[in-house]
Amino acid sequence: SRLDPDPEFIGFINNVTYPAGREAILACSVRNLGKNKVGWLRASDQTVLALQGRVVTHNARISVMHQDMHTWKLKISKLRESDRGCYMCQINTSPMKKQVGCIDVQVPPDIINEESSADLAVQEGEDATLTCKATGNPQPRVTWRREDGEMILIRKPGSRELMKVESYNGSSLRLLRLERRQMGAYLCIASNDVPPAVSKRVSLSVHHHHHHH
Image (cartoon, rainbow, N blue to C red; front, side, top):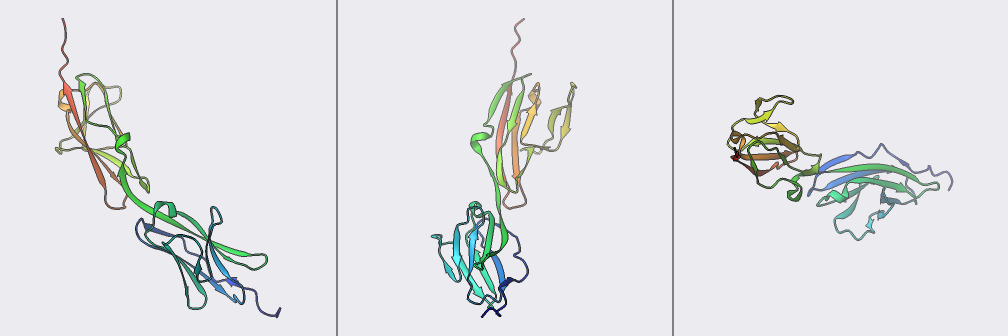
């Protein structure tokens, strides 16, 4: 009968953040559902993932749980980076009602070898740039250190002298007019609070420049 109250959402869907490989759960609560149905969709492309207690997508990592009468849970197991995004809980009333919850997937750092420096050899007095490109979510910080624990020597901008730093932050370490004492193995370390941090070793050799008089 028309006296049945309309379905409505109870509260909101909480946004969640989980590391890749774990499982994520979004919970949607509805009261007075009556003969209406609850569906879960991917918000970006409106793909229907589940209807009531039934999964309709061909993704074995997705399941739905109906709990305590009112709550419909969408569960995604073995999270991948591609699962990042927003999901819509929809009641098929007319007009339809919807709520959205988002999943962020944390990914540990990874150093892209093809876009990072290989070992290099330069002449004394030449410049060298050591670069280290890292991916991950959140975007990793890149720090350079010397493998032997000694200080890194860097030229002060516009100055002749080398200054000593314990570490250097940034994906590119630029070394101008190299001196022999700057040679050695450098480590780039990428970290973003999602374990594990990773590192790559770049060895820099500086050769004597032969002067012809």
